[in-house]
Image (cartoon, rainbow, N blue to C red; front, side, top):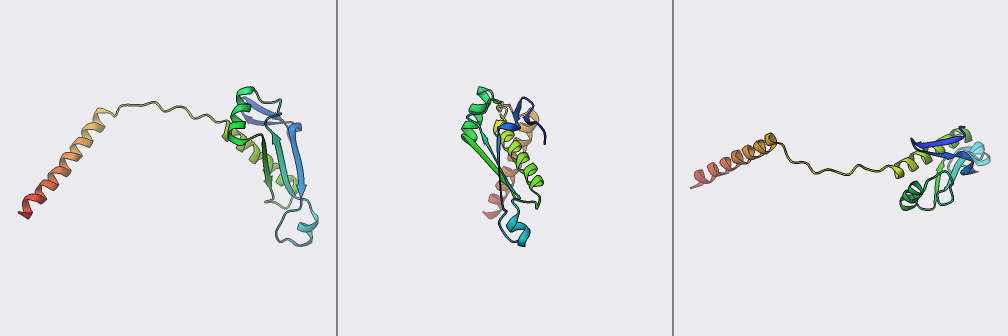
Length: 135
């Protein structure tokens, strides 16, 4: 496992800040599933993390809350579930940190305006022909 969880280009979290818990996976599976603690649950304390700057911390607090908990029990192996949970945590934090670029208002091109008006005139002409035939 890497020493740092690289969330985005400018955000990296020390893996020592992650708290792990392992429990048996639910569902069928016989003796292996009942006796093996393969379900991985990772907890990350957003409010107390020294790896985040103030802007990142505030954004994560607003979007995810003080503590983020992610779990994985897809695989039979604890190690693979651990990797899955860590990747899910990384993706969740990255999505919360992502800032959409503000939309800039643009004007329609002259060609698109002309095409729209030409289509309106054609449609109006069709409707006009229908009215004349019904008289």
